[in-house]
Image (cartoon, rainbow, N blue to C red; front, top):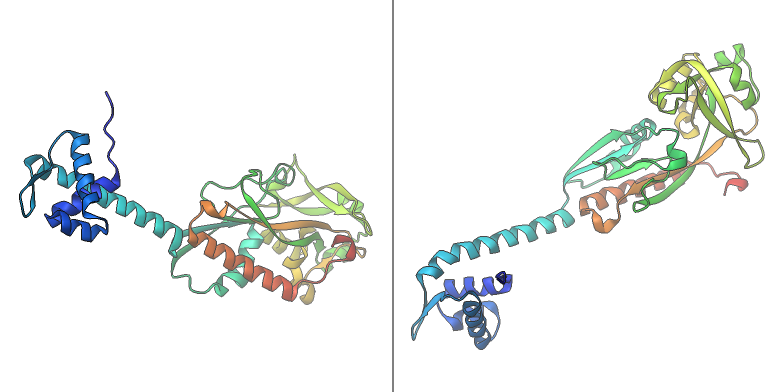
Length: 320
């Protein structure tokens, strides 16, 4: 037995004819030839095997079947219109939730310096969430949280169907307070293994973290196993401990500019021992996301890049 399939176009024409009670009037409303309206009606009735209208010389009236059928047709048409409106709203209106994930330091930076500069947010709800990386993310790729719209982070995505938009390179190195360094001097990364380092929980391997530095004056990288008495789940807490002379912290240089200016923290090495990482924004392809996400994404990237252009020092030639 063949399954009856009705087209929205057919149902729309039946609905307009019922409202107009006249083929010619329906043709005007629909913007199609009267002969075509008559053919659609005849084909529809032939397809279902029942009469929808009684024909008189001046008008059409619904048959008992047509009277019972019309609410179903109008319900389908209304639901289709609601679906179309939903899709249009989802794609084009600045309304709904946009969830942004980032490591603790980046969330803090966004909150302090970026979010306030995004104008005309209208009815968007912006949700900021913390997503600190595990060490394996630098090798295997970072996981994209299920409820995430935009992830700003230090590693590229594990899922290659996602887009990773490069923002900038940034330096990570070792810092400590002047008091700590006066009491526990060191001059090179190898010395870290006998110092108290402030560890990050997500990077723990057994009882240690692995910190990576380039060899001064080259791009060659080397890993160093470090231990200490304090473990934090984010860089901000680790920095507070370092300010209180409790050890050495491994942090982005941009995160400690205020400390360097105030003298509360100092670089641990006189030579340039650093780890350079990429800062990237990860998101789904634009054709898979609503316009509200695109709006927030574009605004975030524009503001971050504008601030980087204004404030970040030029990289050494070997890193460009």
